[in-house]
Length: 280
Image (cartoon, rainbow, N blue to C red):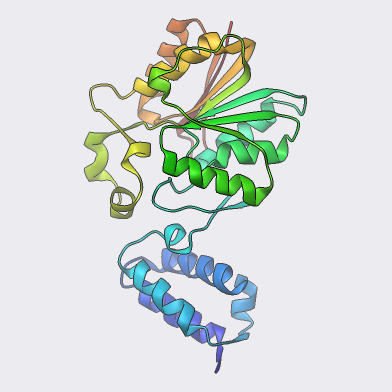
């Protein structure tokens, strides 16, 4: 049976509105219709028809109405123009992480470099960088074997070679003068902030990748900066995604350790969300 996509779309949005505002419902619906049927917003409003769509839409709608993030329902997330497999073992990519990748590409040319991504998760940073800088030799670490399986799957899907390893940066000795660039988007949300966060984040995304103890929120920044201090080549660069509330503390930490040219970068929402520094 062939049905009007516009009618189906309007019904889908109406159902989603029982849980989200109209704009968010439309955004989710467009992601679903694009992923399942290859339809753009223009296709939807041109009122094209499609055969037997209910079998695919019904289970998706059911899971969405339970509160599951659309990226986990579809096992798909877009990041920096690329398509990634995701599930609840890894974080859903965010806009500010895209901005971090853009910053790194802007400040580093195409010449061959050794790059390390610490806490790689689904591999989005490492793989997005490698896509745009194919001469770079990219390594990526994570503490979670499940996350690394997904990162390796994404690398295979994108036909990219990355040296993945299951390592804990809190217990890693330095590798002297090894890397030109080290990047990390580590866990940085204090546990006390859980109650302030959206339910779909707290209930579905991995705690290991999100939260840190309230009494030591910079634990990963401290460990990674100390590792980078010896493992970066001279004039090598360190990049972090950061919690806006800890920007000054991270700047002070990097300064205390002896890094140079420390910069706190603001995202498109004018929040302090990235930091960069150079090994002296």
